[in-house]
Image (cartoon, rainbow, N blue to C red):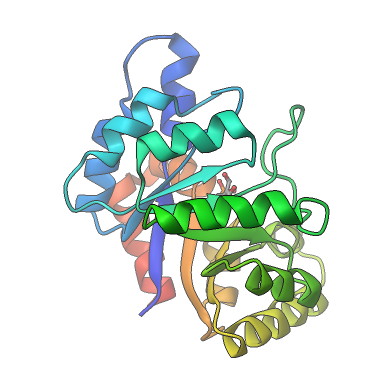
Length: 238
Ligand code: PXP
């Protein structure tokens, strides 16, 4: 059974647009979980453009809710993550000017730092996943550094599908990456830019155990309600 992680960052984006308290990401986390999300993802960005430390801390205090906290490798963020105590960590790259996470981690460049962070979270009983591009080099490196999971950046495939371009080559790249990762004992997650169609395509890959989806779910919920959107995604990934 594949799992659905719902990224609620953009509930906070909407709240911050008014500088007030509504809509509340804490309420959203509980509600989304009640509606069938298997876990909640939040990204504590260095510029705190959506989720803030207090949101993350409150969300992580909700009983029986699995929280996946996305963070960069910056020391300040890593230390805050240790205080926040999520169930899972996903290390992602972060560039100041990007609108959203643009690609996977540059693992080779940050090898020692990433290994240290993975070890630190392991000692704190927190499972770490690395957000990577679908390449054998990054998969082998993720294993070497001791990551328990990888999350494949699906942005390129998602964009090809959305713009009705040929996506077979990228799909094959993802499929062979998943096969390799599975063979060497990494748990595989997938996320970024996904909508119904790209999720349906990727859900045929048995090795993928979890999808993390945000922007499309929140956007689609304006028209159809978050309950119905989650239900539809759960049906697709079943
Ligand atoms: N997975 C990771 C690691 C991400 O960084 C993001 C974006 O924050 C997502 C999934 C969700 O992407 P989207 O909002 O495009 O569905």
